[in-house]
Image 1 (cartoon, rainbow, N blue to C red):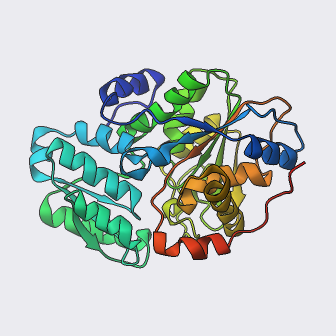
Image 2 (spheres, rainbow, N blue to C red):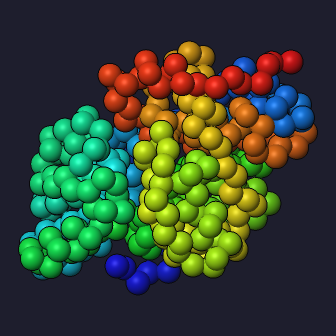
Length: 338
């Protein structure tokens, strides 16, 4: 693990290193989403007041390459030669596989045995050695430790490492560059690597920005960690497999306790309603995790004030296409437009 502090200066430095190597993803807007979210929250939003940071259009289909390239770039020469190992339900694995290929570093990815087949295939196509083990990420973790010891590999953590947060913080800086007067930013949470970096970038640049985390009701690792003041192990259960961390990272918990307005919980039908809206109205294909922040806004779970300028991060688009029909069929209702 890196020992660099997670600061605004560090995020800016990392953003310079990443420039031209990852995408500066666009902000999308939706008048319909603004009307639904405003009505659900009981606060009128103008048609130009809701934006969506399209991280599903990032390399490998999620925000993760920002973090992966930052962490891989921090390895020593000896660590690069021996190789790196990570654990992932899919998106972090793909990102580290891609970053390793870009940097010439061999990467091993440990994934649950039931990981989405398309995510496994993508890791392999990027050149990673994929090891499938365990029913969920928590069970895979013990096997990772065995492999790391046997093979002399360096752990590149999917979310709880300063370099990871510094890389992900570049997403927050891009939001401020494109929407400098943003009032509310909504971020879906797995282990906390994205929200940790984005929150530091936002709050240390523009303290008045209100940042909200969103978790599935049965995958609430960050909310529990903030309440306890330390990581709390859970057995995550949600259709949003990309948010299924067995515990939130210490760094995200520390940042969340200092800066976050709240971490709200949404159920699976609500998440799938956000996914359905994205496909039908935005014409954007997301995975459930990628639609979770949008779903929280559309359902009224995020407090919005009259005239707020709001941004939700669409954090991933690596959905299993053969499951998309079933996922859309499981969507709950959205509040009616006014």
